[in-house]
Image 1 (cartoon, rainbow, N blue to C red):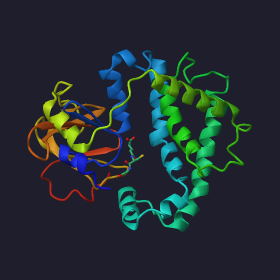
Image 2 (spheres, rainbow, N blue to C red; image 1 turned 90 degrees about the vertical axis):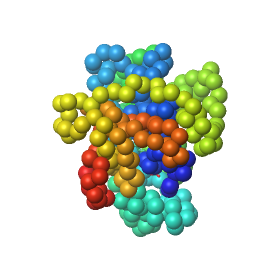
Image 3 (tube, rainbow, N blue to C red; image 1 turned 135 degrees about the horizontal axis):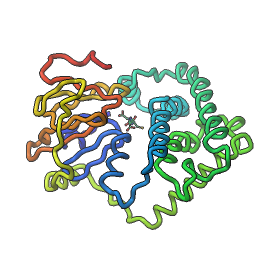
Length: 296
Ligand SMILES: N[C@@H](CCC(=O)N[C@@H](CS)C(=O)NCC(=O)O)C(=O)O
């Protein structure tokens, strides 16, 4: 659905999560996790060694690009979807190109379930097979655990999503024990962390307006395949869902993993920088006419 609080900041991107650090706005979990690691190195959860980093990257790909998250979404119980307002359903269909008709949802459920069962089996028989507590055999959960666990844990907690005759502790003892360990570690970490403060949209805008950028502007890679120039106008949007919401701005940085555009807030009081990952995002020069059909 439209997100007026984000639009006031000058951001059209409509998916959650979005993170603001000063005047830098970060879109998509993939980039947000990477930035949290960089901006708060004292709390880093990521690996330092190439083997560990490889595993993290592959697990992230498995979850997001390998389809585990998408398959978990197919298991959202049909009742909660058909109870939603027709406008909401239409909006979701446009944002995802998926059908939200009851018959289609029910038809897709077995496929979703089969893939999620594969995911449980993969974890049970490979990564967790030797009885380790955490994916990288660490003392505490790390970024690799986060990449692997979040859609699995989410769908497991979603009432009515999984077939409980099949997804049992007896069949997947190591996966269930790992999820329970993770939840315990999470609640222990939360109990010693400061309480998050909730802000209204206009309070966020005021904070952003009065803040500084937290990162230097960055550079446009001269060897980038798109051959775009620093400061040229560009349009950026996600190609996997929410593709009808496109952000425009002046290109300030472009690397293998990130694109950054600078633009004013809606009230023109200040400039912000919006950061997107490169993976699953399209970037085209601005002022190129209609880009609405150019999804991928
Ligand atoms: N690749 C994105 C996916 C984000 C995503 O799909 N967000 C969903 C909720 S889980 C969303 O915001 N959907 C609502 C919408 O599109 O308006 C990420 O990892 O951040």
